[in-house]
Image (cartoon, rainbow, N blue to C red):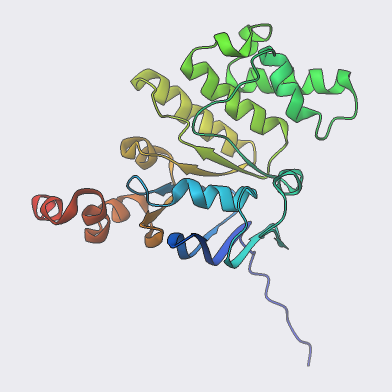
Length: 252
């Protein structure tokens, strides 16, 4: 008899029972979730829920106290941020931190050089990425002189320079007006269409409902919901986490 091997595809990112403590504070508490290749997954929750801490665990800024993180078939929990970035799991930061002495082109080059082996190649990559994110008109502009919306796009561009398989977007729509949010949503969709899986932390619920395939909700470090966006935001536990018991009664 010939044995068969399951051909079920493995998730590109798998988090199992992950936890981290800071002194007596449990910042992330036994969280499990999966991200399939090609998904846009939103990670939401009230302030202090543990979203950015979880991003820090995924990207290698923190080492988990418990649990496992598997990215593209390889265990990465506790590995360095540089190693994780080279493997293709790349993050942006909630508050853009552009290099003050560098132009837009030079900033994107810094990440392109992770894979490009010459200055000429990195310049070509940086120009192409700037075009993809809508900054090709600002290549020579000092990074610090960009508008907030442009700095957010530069954060995405810098991450794309590292050629990610999965990009972690930390509040890339925070502080943007309606038109700028719409433009960022288009960019997120374009990134996914180019073969990059997206996980995003975001407080703008209207935005995540428009762009995400699935939502994962944290509250006080624990996962309280995981599923289709509309079903998740109507979940009583999620409403209670955001608004308290009175908010749940109002929603009902």
